[in-house]
Amino acid sequence: MLSRTQALELLQKSAPTHLVIHALETEAVLRALAERLNCDAELWGLAGLLHDLDYPETQDLPNQHGLLSVERLRGTLPEEALDAIARHNEHNGNQPQTILDYALRCGETVTGLIHTAALVRPTRMQGMEARSLKKKMKDKAFAASVCRETIKECEKLGLNLDDFLTLAISAITSIAPRVGLVAEV
Ligand SMILES: [Fe+2]
Image (tube, rainbow, N blue to C red; front, side, top):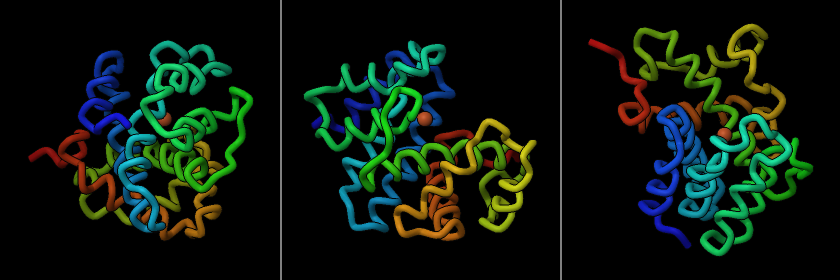
């Protein structure tokens, strides 16, 4: 299996900064989910970090997104991580099946909501609460491209929306300086 350092190097070779930030946030959420659910945090973290590896090539080819990453990563990550990467995008013909598949889908999607919410708060991640995120989820105009239904797939993991949002806020707060979400002074 790739080391975390190798995985990050691989990603940074082709990914623009905003995609690396999305990958780091997804990694943090996936690790926190694995710890909560007593699963393999290393493996889940790597799946999070690399899930959009092919995005620079497939952003206009939704039916290929995920599949090209799997092709590139085959032999370097266990099958369950490759499956989750293929299945995080339903537009390539795959559907989620395992707990890791659902974790990657809701975990990567919630990062879009949290990142956007942080950017409109003067204190960024500091003091963010699940309650206010839930309100923002009901406002269809806010972060309109973030699929609310995919976030709610957290229920497939046995986590209610409040628990999941709280966990994801805490995970992203823990890497806030790395992803540019610290208040400017
Ligand atoms: Fe993603």
